[in-house]
Image 1: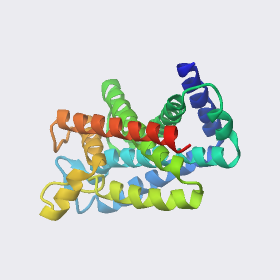
Image 2: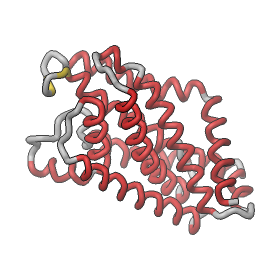
Image 3: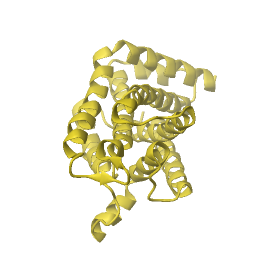
Length: 247
C-alpha cells in the first residue's frame, strides 16, 4: 500500500506534466536564453581555466533548470487542495508519508526531464559529455531536485494560495540561485559574501555539477556529497512532517 501510493501519485503528476507542453518549453527556453545571451556576451571578458564562460556557466544553468522545475512542481499541491483532490487522497487508507514522497519523486523526475533537454545544448558550446559524465549529472541533479522539491512541498502544505506560495518561494529561490556560484567563481569573494555562499546548499550542488561536467571543483567531492545528502534528508523530513501535521 505504501509503495503503491507513491507510484500512483508519481504517475499522475508525470502524466499531467507531459500534457503541459508550454510549461516544458518555457522552463527550458529561459535557461537556454541565459546560456546563449549571457554566455556569448561575457565570453570576451571572462575565462574559467582553459574553457569559455559559456562552458563555465553551463553547469550552473543545469542547476538553475533543476531548481526552478523542482520547486515550482510543488504548486500541484495547492491546485490539488483547491480542487478537492488532496482531500480525497488524505482520507484514503494510505500513509501521508507516501503522499509526500510521491510528490517529491514526481517533482524530481520532472526536473530530470528538463535536465536531459538542457544536456542537448552541450555540443553546441564545445562540451563533449561521455555516458559516465551524463550518468553523474543525472545522479547529482536527482539529489538536488529531490531536496528542492521537498522544500517546495513543505511550503505548499502550509500555504493556501498560489500568490502566497510564489512570493515565499521566489524570496528563497532567487537568492539561493544567485549566491550558488552558478554564474560566477566563488573563489576570492569578499569575506562576508563567502560566508553566505558557503551557507547556500545549492552551492555544493553547482560545484558537484561543475566537477562532473568540466572538471572544476572548489570543494572536495565528498564535502559536496555530504552537504547535499544532509540537505536532502532535512528537507524530506520537513516535507513529510508538514503533510502529517498541516494537511
